[in-house]
Amino acid sequence: MIFLRNFIKSLLRRKRIDSSQISNTRLDRCLTTLDLSALGIGSTLGLGIYVLAGDVASRTSGPAVTISFFIAAIASVFAGLCYAEFGARVPKAGSAYVYSYVTVGEFMAFVIGWNLVLEYVIGTASVARGYSNYVDSLVNGTVQANLRYYMPIDVPGLSAYPDFLAFLITFSLTIMLVIGVKESTRFNSVFTGINLLVVLFVVIAGSFHIDFHNWNLSKDEVPENAGKGGFMPYGFSGMMSGAATCFYAFIGFDVIATTGEEAKNPQRSIPISIVLSLLFVFLAYFGISAVQTLMLPYYLQTEEITKGAPLPYVFEYVGWPVAKWIISIGALTGLSTSLLGAMFPLPRVLYSMASDGVIFRSFADINPRTKTPILATLISGIFAGAMAALFDVKELADMMSIGTLLAYTLVSISVLILRFSHEIDNIDDDINRNITVEMKPLRSKYQNSDEKFDNRSWCAKLFNTDRMKEASAQTSRISTNLVMFITTVLIIFDALLVYLEDRLVELETNSFIIILAIFIVLVFSIISLAMQPRSTKKLSFQVPWVPLIPILSMFVNFYLMFKLSTTTWIRFAIWMAIGLSIYFFYGIWHSNERSRRYEARQNSAN
Ligand SMILES: NC(=[NH2+])NCCC[C@H](N)C(=O)O
Image (cartoon, rainbow, N blue to C red; front, top):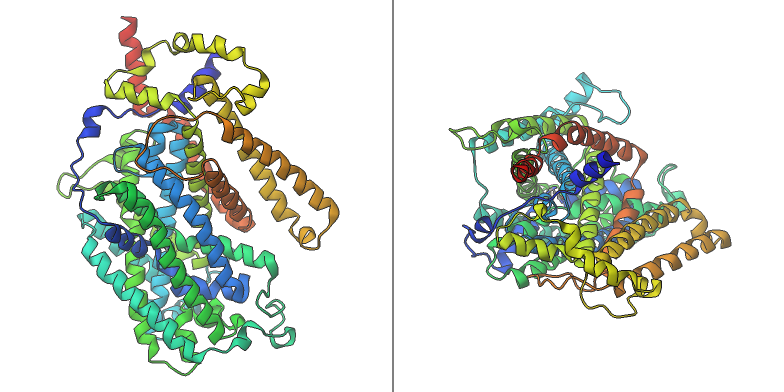
């Protein structure tokens, strides 16, 4: 029993930041809403346009890829708002890993951090792979043709050939990071500007060559394995799987939440620029994918045909090969910014995890000459390069999506828990007064309210009918349990929605009843949560309509996760298994918080 309790306590221990660290923000508050938006667009807009739209159109969504992008955009806006609130809770720039370590506890932080590492490593790998396709398309696919011919890989689940070019690109970038090259906002803005101009050009130029018949092909016009033609050749199901892959295209805007500390007016700038950049990014994806599928039948845009560079191929097809050069300029600038956006945060996350001791400490070793964490950067760079060489863009994209969807979901859960909890307020006060909280006998502090609480009827407990104004230890316990319950119900709900999809589309009664029953349970538990008293803490940015928006965000995220393929889930499970072993065999024993607690106990014993 004691062992179990200590174990759970370790999973929930929180990182302390003391007030001296908080007040000393060395950063300039100089970024405007426009700067933040440019930053967000730069690291988000990329592969989605130049590779994914064609790939998803041909294999999963058909022309409905336009709608897939829309659904993915909605999921991202919800997630973005939660992310921004999470960032606002911790007055210190950092990643979701840091935020959750300070607020929710070590285990959650580790899982989020480990998924961020996945996001950045695979993000780098996928963009590098797309980059290589475009560089190669400038020399008419010679590199690819040779590699395919001389070094075919015939293993299911791997790419058809080892893409050494992608490895080389990743590796050169790694060296830049090791040397300590800094990211530059100016460079980012210029490249993003060029990219947007090219997008505009493609949409306008392309619209002279569109044929609406391509959205309305009949069944006999399309080949055997290319669905049933029309706007949704692979049905509703295909469109939603497409949305799960397209989610990839919107990942990267989280830089806004993490750079937000440098904004002049974070409270306004952060949410506005998140929504603004997602809007721009969505318009770009929507425009490009619409034009592209209207110019060329969707089934002619598979990776085998276009060699992984669909846009130039489409323009060549309509007899305008010169456009290829303009598109390639856009692709190389756009992919550069999203490559840097994926790669730059990586050493930072690894460094902060390693210096907290939750992953191997040697990853935090800073080389005195270059002042960068060399080992962490090299290992992750080489790993990313190997992934880029061995997997196709779509496989990599799906793997990144699944990890990021999980990370975003955990962020939404944390936002919910924290909004309904009281403890955080106290702990922050304690931090401000520089007192170590954990040594205080927490029990006695809450004993009085415990008694009062036991007198509440179950109706009062569940629906707060006696109108408690402020969250207490007990109401936050109830709220946390409610959040856990809602999460479980959502998982079941989404799993069933995906599993019963065909029957639901055919309006089968039994399936409907099941779904309806779960839905009712869900509505009641959400109402119950909404009635619970909340934390009174004021934040510089708060998600509107809590608990609805975080819950909607979780709902969409789980749904999209279930729409991803089994192979993606297997790859993801392997990644998580590696991470959890590192945590349970190393991190939990070596974390700074553990030694701090240990020392505190020793001191108080003396
Ligand atoms: N932070 C990242 N994971 N970056 C990878 C960004 C991928 C980006 N959404 C694209 O379409 O190119």
